[in-house]
Structure formats: C-alpha cells, structure tokens
Image 1: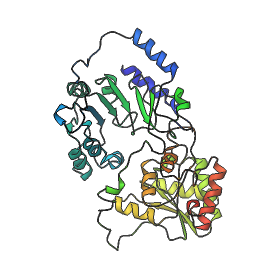
Image 2 (image 1 turned 120 degrees about the vertical axis):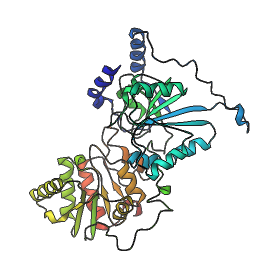
Image 3 (image 1 turned 120 degrees about the horizontal axis):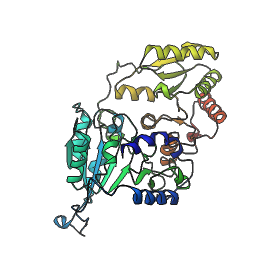
Image 4 (image 1 turned 180 degrees about the vertical axis):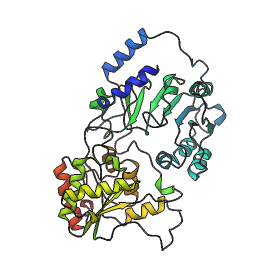
Amino acid sequence: LLSDVAASHAREAAREAAIATGRAAVNHPDHQAAAAASAQTAPTTQLFTFKHLPTVSLAPGNDVKARRRLRVGYLTADIHDHPTALLVQGMFGTQRAGGEVEVWMYSYGVDDGSVYRSSIRTECEHFAELHKAPFIEMAKRINEDAIHVLVDMKQHTESHALNVIALKPAPVQIAWLGFPGGIGGNLAQYIVGDAIVSPPDHASFFPEGLALLPPQISYQVNNYQNDPFIGANSQPLPPDVEPDVPAARTVFTSLNHPRKIKPRRFQSYISILAAVDNSSLSLLSRHETTGANLKREAHKLGVDPERIHIAKVLGKAAHMLRFRRSSLFLDTFPYAAHTTCSEALFAGLPVLTRPGQTFASRVPASLLHALGLRGATVVVTEDEFVELGVRIGGGGKSPAKD
C-alpha cells in the first residue's frame, strides 16, 4: 500500500486536467478496468471491514430520532491559522445545519489557539484531536467511528496522511482542496473538482473518478464574508497603519509565494511594467535574498529595480488593505494563485490569469467563472496576458467595468 503512495508522486504530472465544461461525476473506463484487475490480484487480507456502519436513513419531516445521517469525516493537519482553515471555516456548520450530514473532524495538526481552530471545532459535531497519533491509530479511530465518507484535505502536501488513506479505514474516500490534483495509488475513489479545473473529457488523466460540482460553482469553498479578521464584522484597522503599497499611479501586484514566479512569466511582468508609465510591481518575499534577486533580474530586463516593491508578510487585515490599494493582480503560471486569488477577489481587485493544461493553473479561472467574470480577465496566450495587463494598467479600468 505504501509503495503505491510513493509511486504515485512520479505519475502526478500525467493526472492533471484541461479546459472544458462538465457534469456531475465521471469515471474513465480504463481506470475502472485497471482498478478491477488490481482488486483481483491484490492480497485478500483487509485490515478494516465496514459491516458495523449504520445504514443511512433520512426520515421525512422533523422526526430527527428516526434519522441515521451520512457520517462524513474530514482528515487534515491544517485546522489552525492556515489558508485551508481560512477557506473552510463556516462550511462545516452549514453541513451540520442541513440535518443530513454528521460532521467528524480528524485533526492531526497543532493547536495554535487561533480563532479559526476554535470556530471550526465549534462547527463540527465531533472533533478528534490526533496530533502525534500513529497513523494506524488514526485509521482505527476513523473506522471505529463508522465513517461512511472520508475526505482527505491534504493529499500530496506537507504533513499529509496518505499513510492513513492507504489503510482504507472508510468505504468511500475522497480527495479535496489541499492539493490541486489526484492522489493515485488506488487510494481514493473520487476527487472533488469542477467543470473548469477538472473537466470530464480529461477524466483519463485522473485515476480517481471526477466528482464535479454544478456549473458556475468552484470547487474552492471560501467564507471571507464571515472571516474574523477581514469579514463584514471585523474590526477596522487603525488609521495610521501603513498599507505596504508603493507610491505609484498604477500598482500591479502578485503576492504569491515567489517560487511560483517562473522566468517567462516574470518577463511578462516586466513587459507590462515597462509599457505603463508611473507603475510599480509589488512582489512578496520572506527573505532578503529573494527580494534582491528579483530586483536584479528586473534590472537585467531593462527596468529600474526601484519599481519592484518587495512586500512584507503582514497580518490578514493589513494584507487585504494592500490589495484594496492596488490596481491589478497579475497571476503566476503554470502554478496559479489559489487562496491568494480568493483574497484579491474578495478585496475587489481584478485578477488577470492565463489558465493552462493543469488543475493548478486553472483555479483563478474557476473562481472567476463562478463570479460570472470568466471572459473579463482570463486569457489564452502569454502575449494576450501582456496586452491586457498593459490595457488595464494604462486605462485604470477592468474590462468588466468597460
């Protein structure tokens, strides 16, 4: 089982999806046949059984006692001050309020005492603290709780629990949110996506079946309106807080992790900057060396390095303020902005993006599509990216407002 997990890393590039529109759920026939063949040749010993799982029965009306709800477990290490927690806070309470789902959270990350963690803990009907628990014990706990559907929210990311997923403690296992792609290794039956990031006509690139949300809905949930730091009820910043935005008429910004900035896209940034007078580009850097390198590369491409503003890591409220003081968000490629894109959109900042052939490159297009803005700032080629960036920067308007 664990060797399958390791081998799946090497196959990840071939499992990405491309642009199209979709429907509810798709299983590729070749993958179904391969899974059936694997099941016939696999060892017959299975660590967990599911005979003890209660049958789901949603009684009509208000007879709550007669209901046997669907037990959905979420497995993650990110229930703290983390982008994932920022996105999902509020979702579990909504699921629970519907009366058809019994929400279980299996949290194996640190307890940082944040409001995100306490809020999510309150939302979930059951919250299991599994920090530093052995993988086998985590799997046993999930199986003993008779979970019908287990949602892995980490996949191939830091602090993943693929060891738990490999033990298959639940009869249905789903990959969602944490990693922009599948898991592989026959560890999950489905990956949650949408018509933009994982269209059905590219199901052959995914070993999992595609569980697609309805059209006009993005796979990426968020609840910024009720975020304790940046939502409608958050406290305003003191008037003397500096927004960390350069003093220019047009401020382009790309506050992604700098490792997402590839040479070709950086050249596009510089081309846009050079064509728009009195403009600056704000880039995020956690290290002095990174900022110096970005400025040096800008100088090599013929732009005054002083027009490159090296942004600092700030608290959420101050971070959102600099988005509101900027003119245009320039996306990265081929690994696009995900949570950062949602932040920019929530702040009202237009996002210019070029979706590629991968799930990771098309998340901003998915979010813009969900807002009804897919045609406004979504381009196909790199030349179009530069041309539209110059037009928005020079005119000071988003095409959506033309």
